[in-house]
Amino acid sequence: MPIRFDHKPGLVIYLTVGDPSLEATREIALAAIDAGADALELGVPFSDPVADGPVIQRASEHALEHGTSLKDVIGLARELRAARPQVGLVIFSYLNPILRYGLSKFADDAAAAGADGVLVTDLIVEEAGEYLAEMNRVGLSPIFLAAPTSPDERLQAIAEHSKGFIYAISRTGVTGTRQSVAGDASELVSRIRRWSKLPVAVGFGISNAEHVAQVAEFADAAVIGSAIVALVERSTPETAAGAVARFIKGLRLPQAAPAR
Image 1 (cartoon, rainbow, N blue to C red):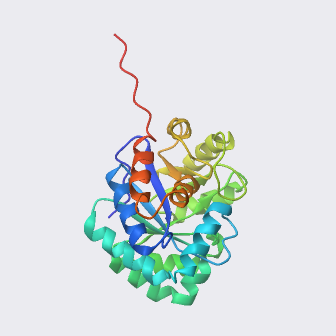
Image 2: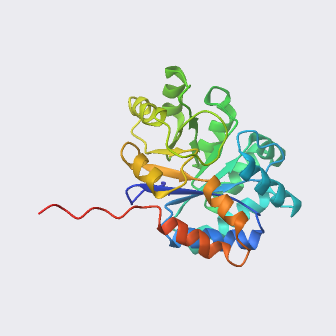
Image 3: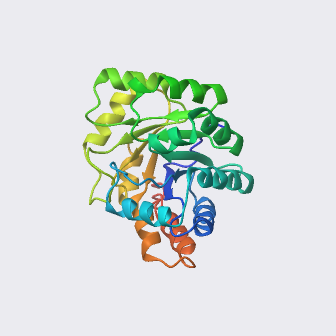
């Protein structure tokens, strides 16, 4: 099933699976979908998440302490697909856990679980030949990160090989909340659209309704990660799902009434 953004703007919500527990992540994920998330990125906890800021690093540590594995993430995807057939599901991982699992086995299992796509945060498109072959074999959408510093040749390659959507990084550096959306993001989206008609989702630093409204002016969707993970961290396992639902419902600013 293709990843669809039926709302404007679309909302892609990142969760670190297993933080604070697998069961809690399942309840948070369901609450996020019911509150308006168009797609979920199911984050595979990893011991060396170099692209992530301290909030997601801590969440990965907590999830690993509980023994959360890539197999658990795939299992959660299967449960969510059965419970909410309409939502977009992306497995978000570093390359190492996938290689340990076995690339072909991972592709088979992720597709069988009902995942729509995969984003491997530390795999660049120029080195992704075997990965792309496996994704295409099982019908999964490979999703790549495009950065403001990406040269045109890389953006063209990303446009050629991506499916589902393209993830535009609003700025260089690690994940984390910021006060405003970087101006580089709009220019990057314009560059991507020269080569691709896929939806473009903007992430890194998106943390409130004002940011989402800014992104909606030039992109198709906003990705919210660290702000959600930090909210889970501040909540108890029993209250996290409700807190996340309320936060997501507040991310789309009310539309202005038409002039008379």
